[in-house]
Length: 315
Ligand SMILES: NC(=O)c1ccc[n+]([C@@H]2O[C@H](COP(=O)([O-])OP(=O)(O)OC[C@H]3O[C@@H](n4cnc5c(N)ncnc54)[C@H](OP(=O)(O)O)[C@@H]3O)[C@@H](O)[C@H]2O)c1
Image 1: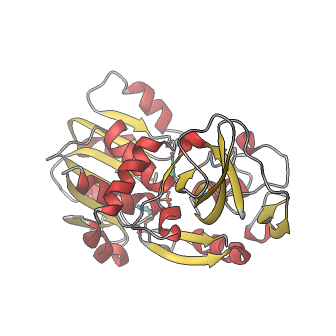
Image 2: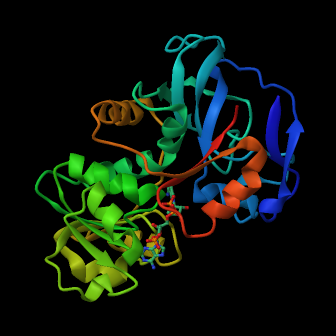
């Protein structure tokens, strides 16, 4: 099969399109005939070698963890899927990847049926980013109807799903993004937007927030603490040097710092499917590239100029 592989860590120029062996599903696995994948920052952090302690030094590697496609074969013990099912999900990014190829094998337990109303490109943009947003807001942050949520990075891959999911949860949503993203942030459901290139949201004098979701992972608990309600929660996507100590120090405190580590599971992906089918959740796609243009797709995703997601078509 055709795949975009890397044989060393480095910049976007390390990708090569090569013929590699088709994977075969082990017990409990499905083989997915890939239709599309999407780029998440963990994919370029892995490619640069920043996560070598997880990804190791065995090459070639096939990056990208998001997948959408059609089940082609099932390993022994798989009862939830049959060949022909349209599925989506994400593998363990730094450790497994696998999305930049014409086929991928993964545990059946991390896959779910694809939203019928979504194209394969749309479906591939959802799993990792939307699961992160959902798990951060509801499972880690405890967001409930009527609460006030602040989403930092409101038009990014994770953030643009977070805004929509916070609205679905019944929250009042304030977004933080660059001024050029303000219109999109409002379209996604923000009732209030603070442009971080015009104003420091920490000095904007807004009423306190029950949940601050730092989807961009840029700020840290201590600089946002005073913006939280008495029992508010700050959740971040990036385990920076001040974050994990803050998580430990606030474990028994009323205002908490928390980190989200997303996992792919059928329960959450089924909710996402339902909301897509109801028209309440919709991915924003910046661009779609063919597999042969993986390098260009990564250059765009890493540019910091994207809204929503960059998708790669694998057929
Ligand atoms: N822990 C997990 O399980 C997990 C899962 C997914 C992602 N992540 C991490 O989450 C982070 C974001 O991922 P992503 O997919 O959303 O990336 P992305 O699509 O590149 O979005 C990054 C966002 O950060 C915003 N941003 C940049 N500088 C900012 C600043 N100073 N203040 C406020 N916002 C700022 C950007 O806003 P503008 O475009 O408006 O400048 C953009 O919306 C990455 O570090 C990624 O590795 C972690």
